[in-house]
Image (tube, rainbow, N blue to C red; front, side, top):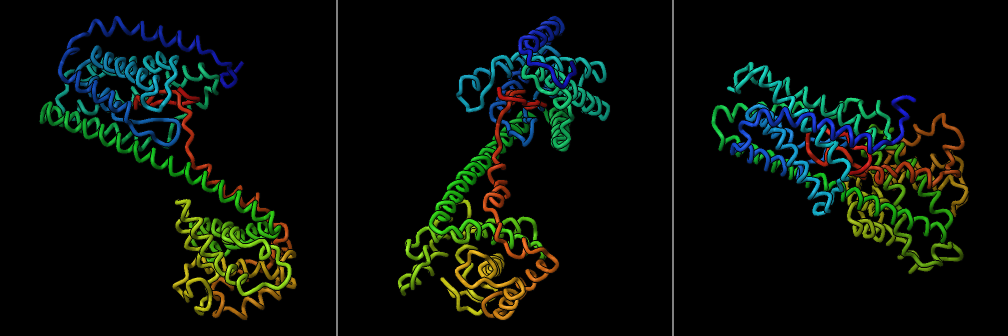
Length: 469
């Protein structure tokens, strides 16, 4: 059996964690000086605040002000104090998080693992710092010693936690022990902050350093609020996209051309934007707008959608309202503001004779002009069009004829460049697949962060988080 295919052994992991902690207790008791120092209570309170309100960083690792507090305790208070601070911090986190007072689950069996992977490295860090520097006086030698101790703490914490959590959940131990390179800049900054605070405490005293630690804790809390807001926005975006795609599918049941046409316009619009040298973000915006450009047709009468018989003046007026209806629908959902503006303007003409706002030239959003070119081209060349079908060559001749009047000539020529040398399947998008283009757009849903954390319970040192606390 290799380390990559071990079965979950939670009892073994918890037992090992308890043994590690029990072995460290006599060492902590033998060095009990500074245990009741006022700095012990301040750093302990700040560490708890850092755990409960710390910023959750993207990926499988968390960093918070608690790490800073632990390292300051190791440097200024010694082994017993930092050992006690870590244990109390983790127990408080387990009580608060485990009982659901804050919506971040904390599995009970992770508690001894967190204590072992944090308290023991912190204890060893304090012993190591005492051996290297003795009392902290903020000299270059002492700060260098503290930096070395911090790095060693992070490494030992990471290894212990990775091994123990892999035993709990049966994860691939090699992947659990893969260094979190994406967080190295954040960890380096945290180490630098610890060194700076150590210098402030030594130079300016207790009050100034305590104030700075509180600022750090407050910053961590505000950062977490930002992360939460971003996650909720992403979740809302994913929900909104599900509603919109359902509307397009419903619309396709009334007019079987809708889904295929939307997929084709989306693909052409994205490719035109890239052909013109636009950014990836703008190309994605063009793709999204192409998928949704006809969403306002959902409000049109059935007789208009069925395209049978002669349309009345009222029918044409209703058709001319669909860009406005689509834009209103997108704005109501709240997260597609730029797309709403494009959808509203995709039937405007560069000569000012379009609808609904009679915009002209550069007044029309650039991506709306791209969508307009993509839509006209697909309407002329598709097999399911309500017009006589044109070849790609005939359609480009027609687009060039109206360029500068109805369509933007720049984007017409960009489309011509795209089509040159391409096969019939691309030039005639009869097989355009709405589900395929929707899968591309699914990056919106994929951006929702799934918090399946286990590891640190938010302690803020380094914590792999495999499955959920």
